Image (tube, rainbow, N blue to C red; front, top):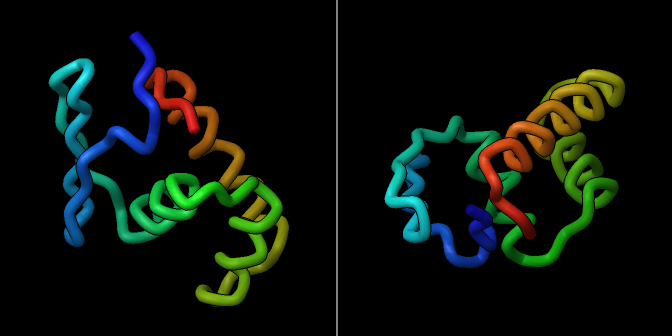
Length: 80
């Protein structure tokens, strides 16, 4: 089953509810930020740039971790 990211219900503490599958998830602060950026229509490159501005982390780490997180979202069936 595929869930549009725009359909996910999120709160400020990282709780995510998938209304299609009925599942709940707990996102990290960074994961929540990424999902919200995706919901706003941001692409991978702009999200990476935003994370580099907001967190003290190098570009290689951002690209690796963001890629891993986006693949995890795909495996859950969450699509932007």
